[in-house]
Image (cartoon, rainbow, N blue to C red; front, side):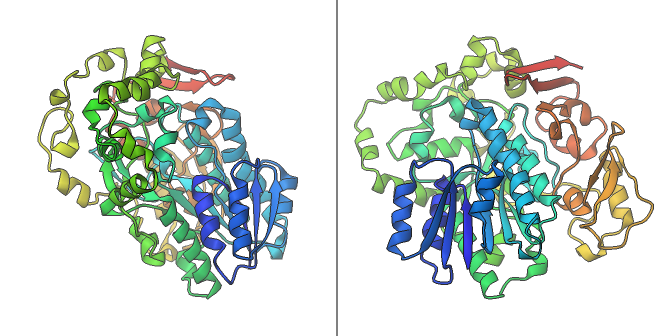
Length: 515
């Protein structure tokens, strides 16, 4: 078996390579990498395991590079992505990797005809957008509500749609959750991105190691013909860490800074972080992948303990004065142009509205941590009590306006019509063969725009054409008035009387207008 890996030496890609390098049934691993940084160590891993390999220096947006990398392989694992904060700093790089890359990859694979490799495409849970305590759980099939100005998630959404609608014969789409990786702490103290994580946002973590175990186990079981192919290939799944790895944004900082003996309150003021418009949730269906591949092995607490043991300088940090550390490690990042404080100081009204519902909301955040309500401590934002343990351990589900759990072979015309109606549009088909969910059909959205998409893509993956598929713009305030699935989530964090249209201009500067 020959495998091509895209996205090495990224955080997940590096771990996947290390796992696959030890697998005897894999004869060769091809790597498509955009530069030589970090690749030498991984080549040593391949050589140590006597694994044949080919390195192609290029990008997934270049057809020649992709053709060279996937020549004569059996599997393509596409983990290539430009993620925040680089996607915020270099939007064009994000577009090329996340959006154009999947178009090139699927085109090249399609042209191979009967010799097509199987495609494992790694997407992101960022597609679900912002969630809070009102609907903290997501599952595949939920509406995709990309948070305004989240270029990473928007480009990944377009890339995923390309894969789902492609003519690649054998594929699977896997949406990666918030991922813990070895150098996470150091990478997140160099930019204002950490302040995007709302303290009350639900987050379900998985480690890079567990994600690599998942990919390894997929290949192992498929090679042995042990996969239930009808319930895996041509499906979409969420990667998650399970109950033991469900936390909030506040918990995440608490655990991370706890390894150096610090409390969140010592490093952060209450108004450092956004109140909404992040992406994060827990998953009611992450067990499905784990049931198939038994990959969930690590906990968030175990991960941070491992980091402490393997990076001795964190132990030295315990000896540093906390006020000094706050000044030189955290407060300096408030001046970064990706930090909310920067938006506030520079009167970036569009982002203040998107992330806080305006300057007034930002200025009204309680300054005392004792007055800042945290759901993990049993308090809703409005001060009412909540049973957090019940909240985190009891999955809730959205109404999809059809039975999303029905046997897919039994999906009928009425299911398609009901979903389209709930989304404010309609199905432009008079007939539909029961269960034929991979045949493209015509739909019409609430704006009268006609588009083609497979019923599987729409019903079971949550895609529905809107302006974000064609422009770097967000129109959910208006769409929520006609789309029931959008409204069911959007109004958890937005007022019904908000009427804003958000967009990036040609230079990727943020704008908004009232509609």
